[in-house]
Image 1 (cartoon, helix red, strand yellow):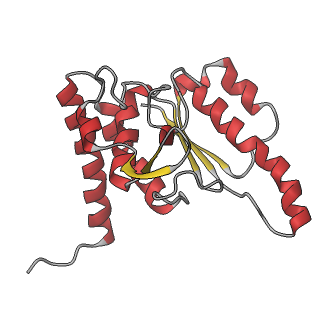
Image 2: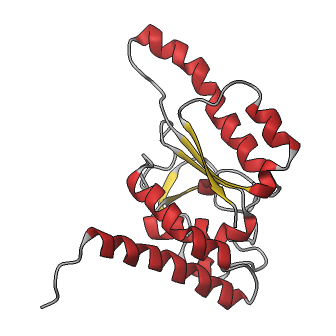
Length: 203
């Protein structure tokens, strides 16, 4: 009889699943970058497991926390996460279906023509990946775009006597993103709200 696993063992095992699924897809496609998904897997797993508030069965929940990944070369990590977490697909009418947002078949078609798993997330990606983040600093711009309206919703919350929207936005940010002017322009709008967090990847 095997010994019970510690939480550390379970976390390591889960992160390894994220890594291996990502690198297997890159190998299958014979194209892509396995390094970023391997390095960021523990960070993304911990974020989704311990911090993000979301319901994989209801990806359209308005008050869900948001996750933004700008690094197109790490897009396979996003697809692996959506698959392993079991996030459901949303159809063209905005209705949640019983199908997975990213199926194993689509992971096997990573970087293939007409697949839902292109090398860089764009308009053909699963709607659950949220935005076409196909250029440097787009993730900082998008994170601010998502978070700023909450300040306006806060006025409604005060009138109602309780918080209506209080979601958080988490984004993976690289040094290349910080070099783009739009990143500083977005940040200069006002001081960063507490509910906006960036994970800085300098590798």
